[in-house]
Length: 492
Image (cartoon, rainbow, N blue to C red; front, top):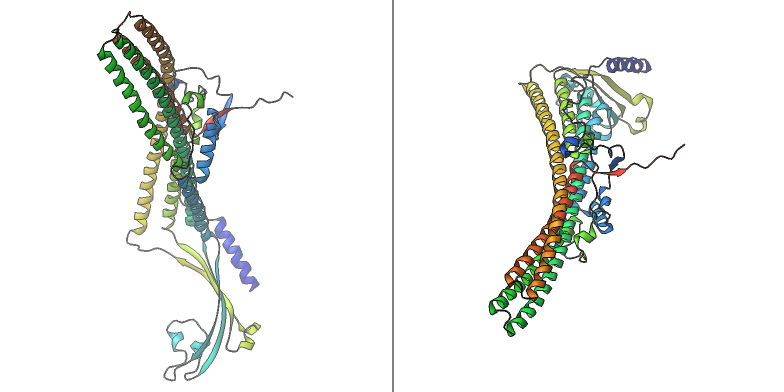
């Protein structure tokens, strides 16, 4: 027994060492990647590149504890994130399942049978029909007896051509793709929470502007009515002022409605029921710090993007499945065996004389499969081509998104500078028009125009500030995270 086992072990080791895994190992395809983002950002300043490193909790750059708390709560309680994490566990289990074929499969069974052999049969007839030898096969016709049986079954497929190993490689790549999809879900969630929060604060500021406008117009109604009572203003001016006051009052409930609906959206994102989140009013410019973006961002940061890593993982899986499909064209070698104890008397069941076993190799050579193997290989190769094109397209799309966002952020910064100057001038014109009207130097239409310009300028400034924040969150998402300064090393 030991001699046979030693010979079998040596033969198996020789087969494993000489095995030939089918298919090519994965190599990352060449991609035309820019060295940095300076051309896209229309700047040549790369001084900040070496001073910054990737930062996972990038939302802290906005210096808002309330926003950070909402994001952290969303990452813990959002149901989409929980579902994505469950899929990650499922993917890792699939890797274990795919690798199981590399190891021997053993099953232990035990049974008791009371057997009665027909008198109208021939002894050994069932052996002639191909059944395995056993007491019931050689039993004399007309006899009955008990049979105690315990057996250990063994089956081990030798992965000579790498079919199982390629399958494990593909499953591992698929699991990695699922993990990157979970990262993408989390990144999208953080982006959505940030954008929703910014929208709420923008509406808070618009509500503040609307209330201040309403107060100012109500004061004007009183002024115009007094002037009209002494003949210094017409009834038309009074009606115009009342219309504008009513217009300002009508904006407030609509803005409040939009804020409530946006709050409901934020509550769902954070795993809360609608109506349970109490966010006190806080203007956008008081709530959020506009962080600076490091210039000259290296394009290597795109390797942090979940969609690119996911696309590459699916490419790795498709490459492995080509080798797996090729392995089906070659013979499959397995080691099968069975051994145990068998006795017609319970008292002798566990004695040495009850031992029986059989073990040996088996080989299966595909001769005719009706084109199944060819179709499997063609499908795997076609799938690989599709995943390669998807990988290249994903990278190009990522470059475009980052370039667009950097361009947008640069334009927004210039736009904010001009809009702040516009607001300052409009507010000055409004104050001057008010003074001149009270002195009777201009008519009321000049005052109305000045008020409308100031209101439009302030509203547009708030909108642009919120849009820039939204673009910044989108850029963090597009690059798979943010940046933090690298701590200075202590001199030695």
